[in-house]
Figure 1 (cartoon, rainbow, N blue to C red):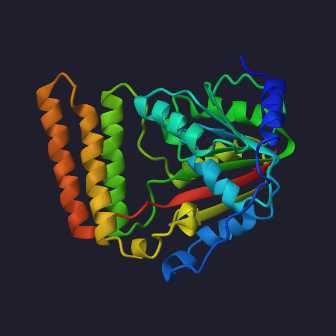
Figure 2 (cartoon, rainbow, N blue to C red):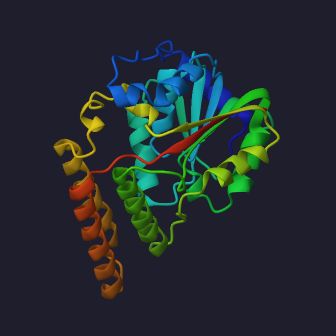
Length: 293
């Protein structure tokens, strides 16, 4: 079991070989992305010194990348994941390669039973993962425990209610289909929560100075070379990526023992591909919450 001292020692060893943190500048943004909440969230993060950061349910560390590009500064990151599926195992393996020689440690660990001491981290965060947890309250309570007094608690989570574009509705449809496949394979994957439910999780943690941003464009789009293409949800490059993603997801069903279930899932996937061709696909909206412990 890891302790806070173990993590700090690992960070200090990394310091000998890691470059100083460098934020990636945000270039000129397309109109839709520029007028969204994403730049405002990034600006707010740019005023926060992250210190020692814990990212829960990290997989390949995608949110760590986002925070590296947006936080004012940081000491180091620890990403934990229980590696419950092949994809999370692969994600963590890929993350270790992607962040090699950087101030990042990946640890296989359960989010509801962490091997860290109280108040071990200056910042704790969880991104797009609440709906993957068996017990949301238990994980958030553990995150609150390992956050130092006065530290930052960050939640980024997609929601299912509110007005959505047709392209976002397609993304939601695909998400529900992916969740169905995960559940058939024994992996927890709920339908997305409502905004009220997500805010309720945050309110139950006893945080101070809670800030809530309601956004319809992902923050990682700020640093993506293809963000102009994605202004159009029917862009051909995006279209082909979306279709390929559906096919790749269905491949996970290849060894499922019930052929009738496989056929039903495949037919639903074909319907989603037709919806992508008709309306395109765009990431659904999310809440970004920052609170102080």
